[in-house]
Image 1 (cartoon, rainbow, N blue to C red):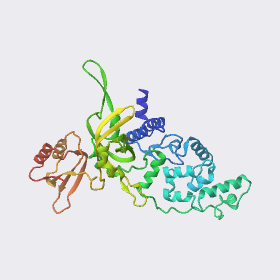
Image 2 (cartoon, rainbow, N blue to C red):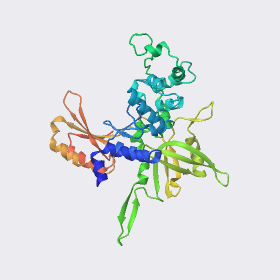
Image 3 (cartoon, rainbow, N blue to C red):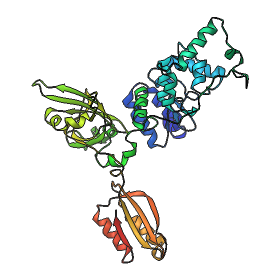
Length: 422
């Protein structure tokens, strides 16, 4: 009861504690991050001025902590917070590099913080900030800060040290203005995933959420969903949402492909499939692998021979739960072409003359919507003479293939209206 009360009245604080308890366990983090988003709680990238060591509840959502950033860790997180408490908020990346001890905030740490989004508040793009710290840049700010710190330790002070805080002295450090040039979305998200283990600011699949839902029977997180039930004899059993032994489909993005060889020398593959809710291992045996090898290879760079770009697939097979984890024994792997066209929901549109629009008719039409899984947008349009038709989309979904529904709606609209599935 105490836990339920805390979750109800302090949802952000509660979920921040849950996420912290699973720090380092990516599959659990992904699961609870998805749960937070479904409950309207935003998961925010790290912020050099707001993050704590662990996940932290804020007024805007839950902020990612320093300990969860690969290459940063708890020790550096403590040092960052100590300097922040002593000297105030960091103005930008240049201020951070200058104030932090170079032995702790080394180049690897700074790069991880940039990739995670910890300096996004400053207005500089991640691409521009990575150029600031690039070791191949002769003017990189990391090496310059280390030199200044060594000089200070040796008792040598420059004019910049003495007058940098004096306005218009001419000895302040020159910080370039933001150029607004950023990596493309795929590169930016890949680097964020590399240091956080999950996608936080966005997800490669998010623009195609609707199209993805049409190509699967369950989302991957459904695999862990179960309920207890009592049989007629009084025995208590566990029933999973996703059944074992029956053909099911999952869809998402391939994040890794391990090529294997059977005892007979035939090629096969172990594939990791990820959607926005979780990930699962696909076992692709030789017969299926021969059919989908080119799909799993993705786009191959002609010069390097390496795969490039995202690989989206739908996988059909039978789920197996064992000590090795949940695995899908694939019987089919199909490439998905996710684009704007495939992601556009169809619309069941009701066209009515303006003089036929009434609250009674609207209520009757809405009452026709059956409580079944559906994906078609439900909207109304009413025509006013010599004017552009007015449209209103309702926040619900219907099944446009339900012939009973179409018949009921057509009957309610009558001869003066029109029912269109577009």
